[in-house]
Amino acid sequence: MTEQEAIEKIHSVYPTGKKNGVENMRALMARLGSVHNTVPVVHVAGTNGKGSCCAMIERMLREAGYKTGLYTSPYIEVYNERIRINGVPVSPERLAALVERVWPAVEECQKADIHVTEFELGTALAFCCFAQENVDVAIIEVGLGGRLDPTNIVKPLVSVITEVGMDHMQYLGSTIEEIALEKAGIMKPGVPVSLGAQEKAARNVLMAAAKGLDIPVIDLDAQNVRADQKGVTFDVQTKGETIRDVHVSLCGRHQAENACAALGAVLALRKHGFAITLEAVRRGMENVSWPGRLEYFGQVLLDGAHNDPGVRALCAYCDDFLDKEKTVLLSGMMKDKETEKMCKRLSTRVRCVVCTRPNVPRAMEADELCEAFEMEGVHAYAEPDAARALEKARGLAGPNGLVLAAGSLYLIGEIRTVLRKEKEFAHVI
Image 1 (cartoon, rainbow, N blue to C red):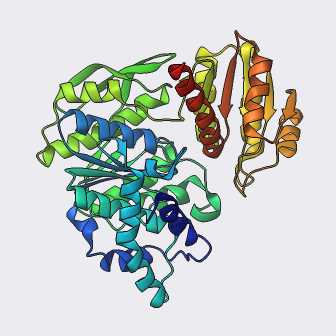
Image 2: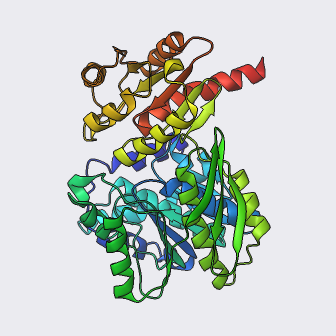
């Protein structure tokens, strides 16, 4: 099987897949020998910050000498990014081999009238890969919610829940309490949970769920947070010591909160016998990277803020470090997001906006997004083609300005591919 054939197989189940809680996943993994039970797991849920938190945990473990698996979604540029060994995406050949391994089980499920979704298939690929590689620990990011997410068949060493916010309300509930309860569904008896910073209503739900299961809660708080344009430094008090001047190489003050959730997971892993020194923690935080989240490519800044909590974090960064008069926003959004609220927040932080349309069915048309920004009093231009929109935004920003690309991870993937190829071409020359 070629890489292209493998990708086509993965996408082929999208039209036929039927969500059924975790039952599809249990049936699929049973036909694959339940290999997910052989892999030590850290399970991470949350509305925002869970990908960054996963990346921090993975890097700290790697710096401590452990072999890691990392499963995240969505991918930014290529599907292989979702499954990583020691931080490196699986090769196209390896992905094809994994699909060959899993596909017969998918067909067996179909014969039994069990129609797995694309995400369930991807999750099975990851579990099989991590079992074959015999990783020391796999960091598994929840796809959507928690309680009914396909990843929620694991019995992890520790659970992590980063900030809970209003997103995917059509699936998870219309209030912060309902959404928090869905996230709390990853908690398991006997498994400690590390919490990121939470709104009061969400925290109350999460703490009550943990109390009901009688499980330990690790709730670290970032202190003395100092942010600069390229990272954040903070202190944190644990039960055993005060750790000072932890530096995270990810941008934004909010990353200190994600780092505390990640550090809480590491403290729990220590109790399971993982030898993770303070030096490994520091190196992990200093060396972590996570594409598409406040990531600079020269005079272009990429951020995958695609819901209100994410946009609030982005706006805080803009207020701290960006000059409104020198900043041009390049934006594309999905129809099912809180567009009006996001446009309102972003419009006051930029000089003008170039609106485009990410190349996915759920995307809002560029003209429609343009109108939404114009309603907020900022001048906006419509350019449906993302590459041409980037070119226009650069022209408007000029040599001393900055292009801020934000609004959808799908848009960030398209723009990042263009920028990465430019960078590779420059290196060749």
